[in-house]
Length: 120
View 1 (cartoon, rainbow, N blue to C red):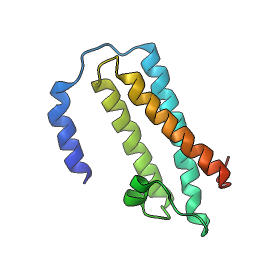
View 2: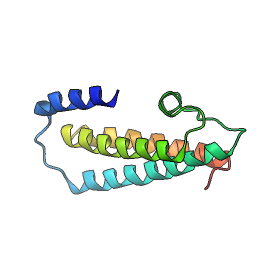
View 3: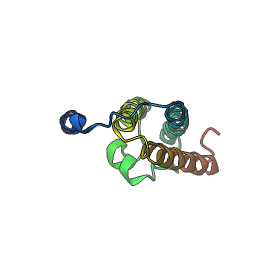
View 4: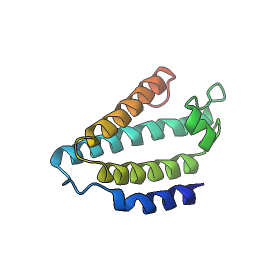
């Protein structure tokens, strides 16, 4: 499955934006990586809680209801690299929207995980 996406990204790399990477882009990318890592760290706790299952439909499809620690960190690494590559390929005016949407999404998940007593 991942090979298919990798091929698509390689074929579309010629469409990447040549806009320069800015300090704002770096700050947003670091913020994304931090909240994503926190979300994934909390997600590793689901396997120890029989009363909880992964509720994100996309993550549940990829990881299953009770994801293992290694699976969660492999997905985190894949998502972090993919998010960065897509951010680099986007025109500079679209980057903050892409990065911001993912920051908000993971922050929302962290809040939800905290409400479920998952390592806050």
